[in-house]
Image (spheres, rainbow, N blue to C red):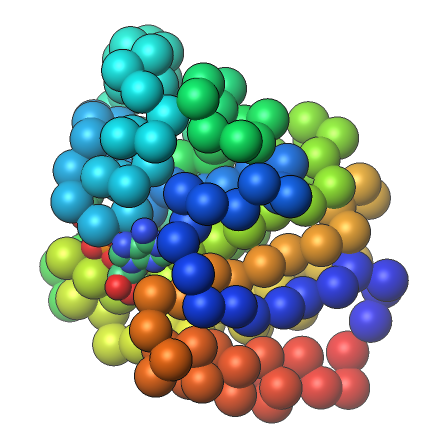
Length: 175
Ligand code: AR6
């Protein structure tokens, strides 16, 4: 499978010190919010929101890159996931988030990227469906990657972890 390692772990996306970039499940204005955006902005400090002002707004499916400020990473990649059932087609827009984030990481020469389960909190995307979309997007994008060698999904609960783990095992098998 193209030499890229893909793994799922339980944890906090804002505490992944061994990763070059962490992905933010952002809002369009790239402002601090709840969930992932809250954890990332509070760990990064106010400099992140300041830098993000010039990058906003973004559209569903889009990804932009910033510095990581006080986070223990090199960069934050901000993705705006679709609001489930509102931003349509939700599955294509969610897949675009993963693809665009990975291509952006690759263009910046990064070796490792950690993702949260984009859109599955406030934006209401059913977790198992989101996991299937994520793994399919990865399988489609892996052949285009050069520098990225490690992709990690960081899930917030044991239950969410097992759903993503299962999707990873079935989605990438045979790649
Ligand atoms: N680390 C890893 N996963 C987390 C963390 C964390 N620290 N915190 C929550 N999750 P959400 P969305 C899980 O709502 O659905 C924000 O307010 C959570 O259990 O952060 O894309 C933004 O400002 C869920 O499975 O992102 C936007 O307005 C997943 O991460 C909006 O919410 C995503 O939950 C974005 O909504």
